[in-house]
Image 1 (cartoon, rainbow, N blue to C red):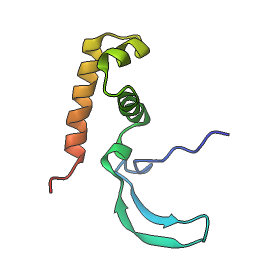
Image 2 (image 1 turned 180 degrees about the horizontal axis):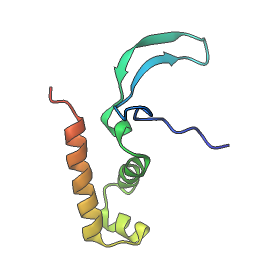
Image 3 (image 1 turned 90 degrees about the vertical axis):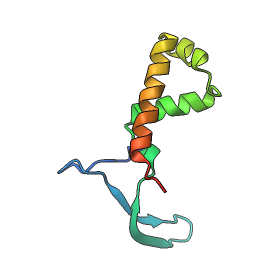
Length: 93
């Protein structure tokens, strides 16, 4: 059985969703509030997968290019685009 995908945008207006309740399946404790999703969780699934692959290849773009069957410059450009996107999603402190 496939795990349900975490929705990241409102199906009605496309605004970013926030987490409002967390629960412990072990003891049934619940925490409610209004918590924003972390920046990486606000990315589409394919971009999250790219970042995970980057991590699992120890940041080797050459290895990623080989695994993905695309050129090194293509992987580099995709990474640069993701870096800019994550910067925009990350609030400055």
